[in-house]
Image: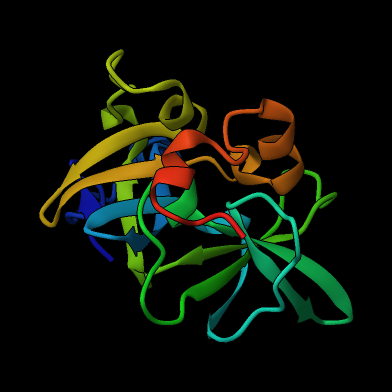
Length: 183
């Protein structure tokens, strides 16, 4: 695994220095929505289910892609494309099952594709620019420059369906209506 923006793992074996640098390394699973590259902390990912069909939920907000049976539970799947204001994907989406910080709300995240694990130096995270709209600021935790381009970090706590509903930012908004995504 490659660490982006750090000398970590480059033959340094100083003991204390390695432990300090290892603490500064963040493991992100890369994923895509449209042409954009995102990352989510691997510690929040319970399982990647791959592409599959979901059961639709009538009258649900546009960001709810449906529900899926997962190990005896019914899990709500959130459509990342809808949160970003992108048109719905033509094919099936990949579903990642995520756990919140306290395991209180397990949910799915529908993305176009899941890549590999990227190790980044958390000290090199760029803050969200002040020009982002309120909805994007609510989802993003910062960004990292990688060889593949800008990798935007998503915060799994902010992606929880209950938190999205409480925020009021992602209901059936005009930007979703314009894309014809209302059911």
